[in-house]
Length: 273
Figure 1 (tube, rainbow, N blue to C red):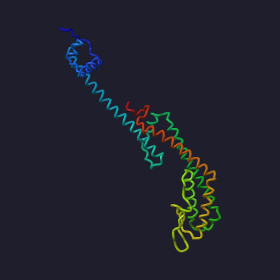
Figure 2: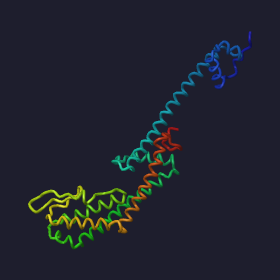
Figure 3: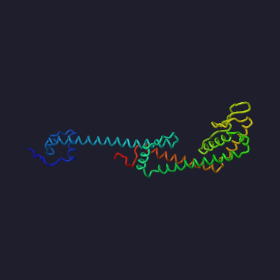
């Protein structure tokens, strides 16, 4: 009879090897004879190897699902951030988004995303200041324009307020590279009582004016539209919008990598690993 060693402990590597041989068609008695061990030991450790493999696969599945969920959270956060930057209706910020932002920053501490986001905040403030500067100067010059004196006697000078609002909007459109409104196409007279019309420029209402006053208002609008683009206030607004556009593009390019790659390199304290 073959001398079988029952005392030596079976190591994990050996039972995994037995499982491999068993799955390739070698019977437990053959393994036992070949390795000079009891067949019951072979069967026992093949069973243990199967259990260990199943437990490892289960843990791997749980970990894989957790990682996919974590990466999915970061990707969806990047998508929401991208939508806000693209000018879509903003998603209400939540405490969870604060955590996700912190998580993404831990994963990508050296990413230019954080520099672009900080610059974006500064540029939004600069655009607001520049817009205010244009609007303030428009107000000062419109109220000082002697051609508009007849409208100052009204209890509510809607026309002058309308002119300032319209031209501020026009300046904002031009500074972003858009065409804006056109006097010949968008200055609309709507019939009112005899001798009067309701005047509007695009969606901007300027109230009820006399028929003969329409030409004056049109000339004022035309003169301002031809001069605004030479103002320092307007040039500041134009420069701010140009840089804002560039930073937005760079930021969206970085976010696109996260969104499309679907896996975020690095680690954070919320990682499943």
